[in-house]
Every structure is written in structure tokens, then in C-alpha cells.
Image: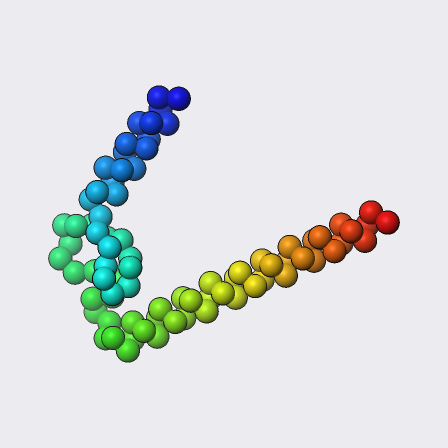
Length: 80
């Protein structure tokens, strides 16, 4: 049980070495001056990338929902 607490303390210490970018919300080391993810992107390029990420997550969620519904339907049909 104590090992779990030690792991949690290490995660908290690691989290304290990071900061969140105000433009893209990616975590990066505090020792780096600019966000390595978006500092080289223009506002238009960043917006395009963030929208692309959002639609990818939505389509993955829809796929998971359809897959789960299909499994439930198959299980229901096989019980009869």
C-alpha cells in the first residue's frame, strides 16, 4: 500500500515540473520557454489542428458507441 503512495507522490512532483500552454492546453516542461506543440503555428493553423483533433475524438466516440450497441444486440439475439 505504501508503494502506491510513493508512486502518487512521484506523479505529483512530475506534474509540478509542467505547465499548460494557454493556446493549445498541452502540458510541457517549465524549463522550456515556448510551447513545443504550437509556438511555431499561426493562429489559423492552430485552430485548424484543434478542430481536427476534436472531430477525430468525436468520430472515435461514435465508433465505440456503435460497436457497443452492436455487441449488446448480438448478445441479446444469441440468448433467445
